[in-house]
Image (cartoon, rainbow, N blue to C red):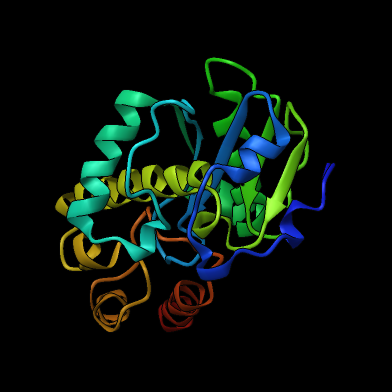
Length: 218
C-alpha cells in the first residue's frame, strides 16, 4: 500500500539520505533484494531498520561500492542496525517465477525483523503483497534512501558469500566471480559440465540445455 507519493520526489545527484524516513516517521525499514538475474542460486532480500542517531557513513547502492567497502559496511550495519535476511530458493523461483519469488524473499525479510516496522521502503516500482505493514516503492531507492542502501549492501554481501561457498562444492562455473550471473564462462560451463541442483531450470539458458540433452538422450 502506497500512502505517500514519495517515489515521485526527485533528488539531485541521487545521494541517499534519511529524508524519506524522516518524512514518514515512526519505525521505518528499508528493503532490497539481489539475485533476480542469475542462472543459479537463490534470490536474497534484506530488511534493515537504521538507528537515526547512529547511521554508518558511506551508505550507497551496493553496486556503486567496491567489494572491500561493501564488506566493511556490512559489518557496521550488522553491529549498529536491526537486520533481517531472507531468501527464496531455486525451487521456489522455478515454481513461482522470479518476480513472485523476489516478493516472497522480501516479505520473509520484513517478517524476520525483531520488531514489526511502521512502514517499509521498497526498492523498485512494486510492493510485495501481504507485508505486515504499509509500504512505499521507491524507484532507484538504493541510491536515495540510506535504509534501502543498507538493505542492498546486506543482501548483496550475503548472497555473494553464499555463491562463493557453492562454488567450492560445484567447481568450474565461476560462481565465486560471477555470483551465478550468465557470464561467458558460466554459459560455457553449463554446456561442458551440465546443470547443477542450484541452477534455475525455468531460466531460458538452463532450460534450453536440459531440453537439448533430453532430445539427445531419446
